[in-house]
Image 1 (tube, rainbow, N blue to C red):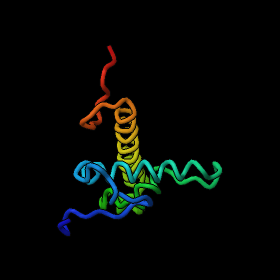
Image 2 (image 1 turned 90 degrees about the vertical axis):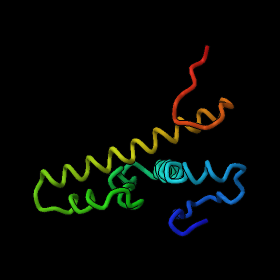
Image 3 (image 1 turned 60 degrees about the vertical axis):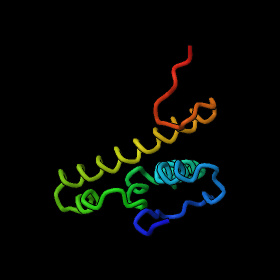
Length: 115
């Protein structure tokens, strides 16, 4: 893979994938979902927030700067941005997984309507 197309390796292996292009395309989405699932194994007090998952995955540099700001409004804006990013990635991953379970290919984030 070209160096500008590489992403961090998730805790599972994508090297055995049948469709490496799809895995590359959805890699960050699936990685966010894996972190979210792993997070639910902890007790409620030990769980990470969406903000902490977003910072760990480095979704948005500007939002991380805002989260460290001294003003309350900027901190809230940074947290809202991270929350939106992580929620979007997790919901897209859930839709992708649901489509694969229903044998709907090519994989997309849109749900196939059952008739």
